[in-house]
Length: 114
Ligand code: AMP
Ligand code: ZN
Image 1 (cartoon, rainbow, N blue to C red):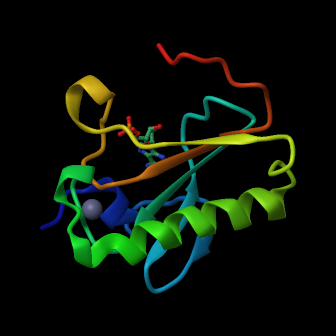
Image 2: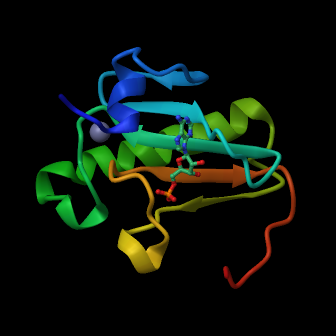
Image 3: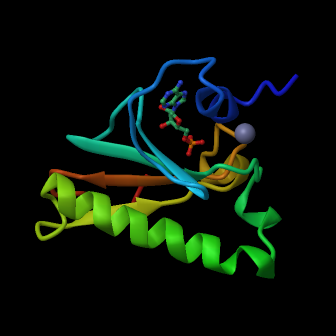
């Protein structure tokens, strides 16, 4: 049995607010938002981390960024600005080992990150 929380969301075994789903990616609302807009974009296929991407996934990553930009536009925070973040492994702050990209917006985001 796959214990991955994002795979379970895709299988309908855990509830989530799903904003977009296509044959490659899904977009959900983060359960613990760190900004007024905090969405997660992840591939439908279980890929644990950025380190597991291969050349075959180049188009997938491009699609993820294009979907992020489209959703930001649809939700009205593209022009004010946003951040796309991928945390990789322990020092990167990764807590769910299914590759995902945070889409954060709706307020001014500080830099550098903690
Ligand atoms: P990361 O720490 O980069 O691995 O990010 C994992 C993110 O997944 C965190 O921001 C969590 O709040 C979020 N998260 C964990 N479980 C769920 C869930 N069931 N539904 C939505 N978001 C979740
Ligand atoms: Zn998964």
